[in-house]
Image 1 (cartoon, each protein chain N blue to C red):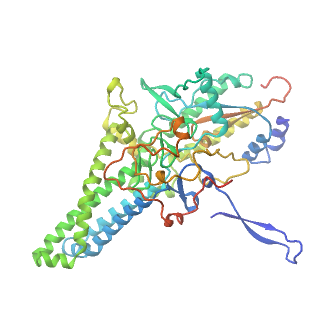
Image 2: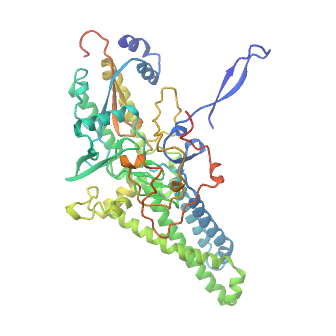
Image 3: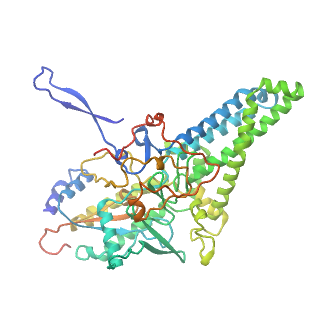
Length: 156
Length: 393
């Protein structure tokens, strides 16, 4: 049923409405991928494959998603010429420049939101899963909602 | 206030439609914690703002006296650049002060029920069974950062394992990332997102204080050369007040700036310094330091501007899950807590604390020169609609 809804409604609805629709489907479980602090306080998530997803998705695909997210967050928090320039320029304008300009981090967060949307549409939604953007959980966890699998046959 | 106008039809009147404003609930109204919000969630501060108003009064008052009494004379007799630079410096101080006070310090949102339950499950699985009558072991996770073992503590209020360098502020009742301290002078916590503004505030305020103090002296000396000292004081009575305020401010603010400069070069927080986390005993060293003064300074002051993870202005829908309130900790605020002297060390929550929170007096240390916070005067409630956690949702 979820596949039919997905194919019928997707061209017409905004993506967040698609997620609202998904939320009406029964939730079997929620998996929380925790933060990985081994490199310090930068935002990285553990690539360990959760047991609850074993029957639903390929381990490699999951790891690829998490690794890509990690690289995007690393790009956002990178200490380099660009962040120093942005910091100095903002300081000189007494930080009033942030009232009209978007910070580099915010730009990357938009990229991350688009990537998660893309992954949900292509890989996770067909398998009855839903990735929640970590920013909605305070950058603490990547929440994966596992919907009840009503399709006949294997989830792949 | 963001309003949605929707049409409600009234069938028994000739007019077919009546426009009725419908108020939208924003997420900040339902946020737990003891913060005050203004401008429909754009401004976020601590509850006790009395000392912040004092800071504003002192800075604006002293600068006004300087512009009124000294600047006309110095601008004419010495150089017009003097008052111009004073204005620029004053505006910069105000800008960074307001930025420090009004921004989200890096508050970590509390765990939603599903996440909290998931973590509880993991903890219980790790602990196993505890014999009856025995206290369960403390909830700690060990992580290895740069070859150091760092312990992550569990926060019973927020129901999360605190990230490294995060700490729970008992005044604001929030976990704050890279928690430095709670500053009553700016009326907010100082954490990851506003530490650089706080540092620039202390630095620029030191400069402003030195500047005003110096030119007060120069002004009195110059004027005393023309007339005598007593006449000068009579002509510009504000000078005495300014010199007094600047003299006492100098010692504390310049000292504070020096202290924070030292912390920045080591990439440490006030919290870590007070607790002695990286003093070197047990061969524990700061795993976050780059071991290079310039790199540490660059990271703290010129690092990326972190976004707020607390969605304050998002619109609450029916599906938005609300964080459950803790009923036993939040019944009528006890008088001791609101009249607490401004502690620099947050009161870390343990399971016993959350149960006896009402009875226990806060056991934080206090610095002698910090003033006693008074209970909120009625003026503060007009600062904006403050979410009352006790009101039924």
